[in-house]
Length: 530
Image (cartoon, rainbow, N blue to C red; front, top):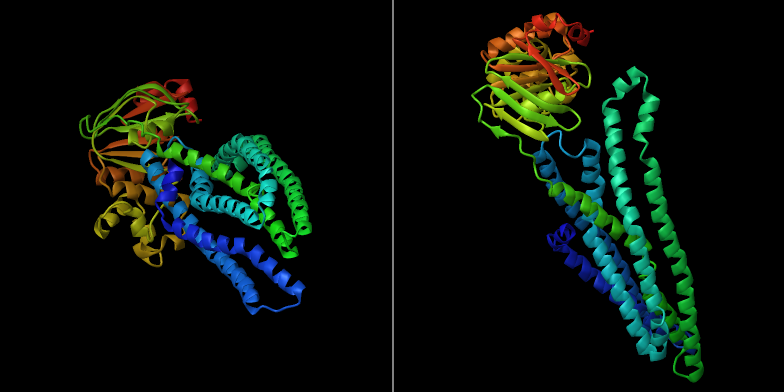
């Protein structure tokens, strides 16, 4: 259905088909024109009309092929762009992190969309090839019906080859596309954590993890090429056999006086054109790849967005989690965050802190349970992606707020003094803005503050700041957003000490919710910060 939509939405494939039809007609007439020229040369006469006819047909075919290349590129580009727009909108609508890993999503956006986007061109090429074969058979029949009969005896075998090729490549092509997406996902994940991998000395183990699907990819690729090679050598044997049979029948026709030497040459040409379908192994493989790519794209487009709970049900500024679980991250979490609370989230690496922050902030849908959230949410990350042409645009990204609000947010995030020292101040292009990790974090925090949210979620958003600066930033944010709920993921005991309450996570479960001072008496809690 998706491929059908790709074909029908851009009617320019009709122009491509019409152009190809003209070029194909010229190509079908060319062997007959060549036969006439050969017979003319053998008779020792010069017929200007015959020569011009031959040259004209060759010219039409060449020009038609050139126009076809341009049209095919334009159609494939438009189909690819349409698929990418739809995929991008769907992936954004599914939220982050979504069901599809980043690398796999990139693979579907780039490779799969490009392959499926050119399906209309593939169909036109296959249709013209079939039409050429039928025209070649008709031309053989016009020369001598016996030649057409001899050629048609090979058709069942040719169709069997095509059917066998499509059947054998289907599974390998689907596996190849799937594993390519998995490899992309693993590679992108590794690139994103490159510094961490290098610092931990786990480069070899990580390389092994990324390349683990490679044997499956190789097996699928070898299977595709083996099937294609089998198709090519079988076609390579079939075509000469058919040409020899047609040539033999044509020879008897010359002896009987039914055909001329030029007709024999034309018969050989039409035999080659008639077997063109068998020689389209690469195109047939491309059709299978387009079908597999369309299935991967359709998988995204038909994915339903998971419910995120009942927004607005809780009191303004408050958050409540009821039996919330996130696959491989959180397990049956119950949590109530009253409005105006400063809540710290602590735990060892992998305990589920970022997953909990994502659920509270609405960036991740729970696999089970219910999230009740009152009011808007501002979110700041440990490694913020600062989008926008200028510094001011990056802070106000996604809003229509003016410069005054942007400046106030930057002052609250203690980054205003940094920005005003830039060559262009707030109008400095982001591409030309050198930022340390802490400065980038403070700009990301300003981007969250400028929205004036009722709930502010900070996921390690001040981890690159020293303890004194972090404390200053916290006081400034509290002054800029008085009485707002703050949920802060932290690894620092000092931050947890300043919080009203601490959520202590362990293996995706809430081990305790209490003030830091009470929890500090537990040696295992103290070890979290060690």
